[in-house]
Structure formats: structure tokens, C-alpha cells
Image (tube, rainbow, N blue to C red):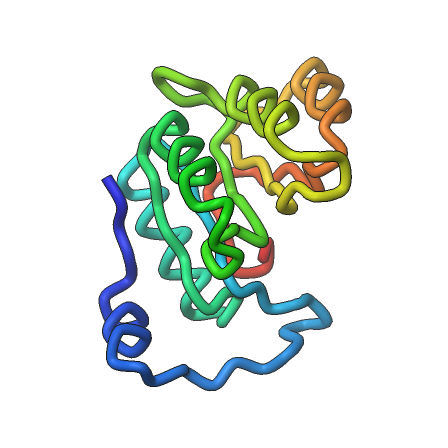
Length: 150
């Protein structure tokens, strides 16, 4: 299931580009963000925060990592759809965040993967150790996501 923030989608589908500054709080504004979480409320919160912060021009939400991975594979030839940043929940039903990251590591060439922010309500030292092997994981964010985390 893919969700999108209605106002931003309406603007983009009508051809109107919302004004987006180059930097927000010294952070780059991304063209395309992908959010993967099996929790509907966490998805809605993340997408609204991304929109409010003008963190990305477009965002897509996925409840299943398998669906998100398939979407990435199918859209790799379309540069405009390649995510610049991915927010992924670590603990999900079905394919979990670790498995998703392993498949991303196999799929992307070194240095070509999107930046990944891992979301979790619990982070143990073993989790941190396992995540360090993925160079594209830039940050671990404790849930719930806050605008300051972006």
C-alpha cells in the first residue's frame, strides 16, 4: 500500500512545484524520500513531518519492506524516482529492516545507495553493531520520529 500526503500530491500532480529552499537547518532538501514502516500511524506521522519540514519534494510510504524493495528495483531506470533517502523501521513483520538493508547492500553498487535512516523504538548495542556494516546507514532514530530528527 502506498500512501501520500494529499496536499503535496495535489500540488505536484497539478504541475505546481511548492517552493523549497536548498537547505533547512543546514540539511539538504531531498528530491524523493521513501518511508517504510508496518505501523500506519508511524507512516502518517513521518510523511507529515517530511512535508512540514520541506525535507523532500516527494515521498512514498510503504507498509511492507518487500513492496518497497520491488518498487526500488522496478524504478531504478527512472532517475527521478530513485529515493535520495530512506527511513526504514528496524522491526517489522515479514521482511524486517535488517533483511531490507542486506538486500539493498546487494542491489546497489558501493557509494550509489540512498542514505538510510533506521527507525526503531528500541536500540540495543547488538543492533548498533549489526547496522554499522551498512555504509549507507547514516543515523539511527528513536521512535517516535520528531521534526528535529530530520
